[in-house]
Image (cartoon, rainbow, N blue to C red; front, side, top):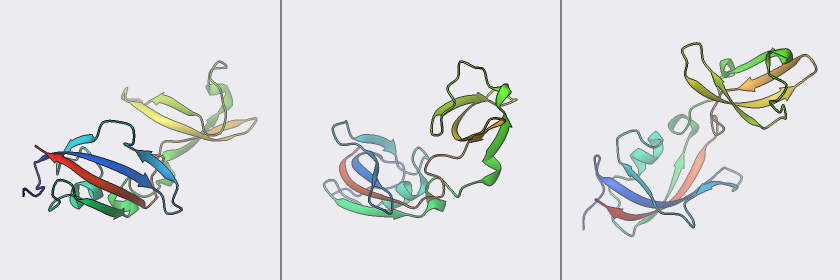
Amino acid sequence: MTEVKSGDTVHIHYTGTLADGSVFDSSEGREPLEFTVGSGQVIKGMDEGLPGMKVGDKKRLEIPADDAYGPLNPDARQSIPREGIPDEIPLEVGIQLQMQSPEGHVLPVTVVEVTEATVTLDANHPLAGKDLNFDIELVSIS
């Protein structure tokens, strides 16, 4: 039976959980996730955890933050004057906004603090700094 190797396109079902067991993502009720192993389309720990698997195999991947979305970067948090944000934009902790970098790139940010004078935005990935667990099932290799 064929084993997964770098360069193969795979289809997997998965459930991603945090250390406390809470589910942050799952393919349940959806089509399997398709990607090319070793291409960087998924996090490093996923790319490195699939080689050697065969169709039908199930596996649990325990992926440290450094091989997932990386450590939290304190420099990715920025406080800006509240008046710098248009009135029509809701300012609630947890809401996600899109900012534009000076180079014109769209950057997703999360509002993490709102005071009368400032709004603190966090551009870290929501899963940065977290160890992740994935229960996966290899559906197919092509």
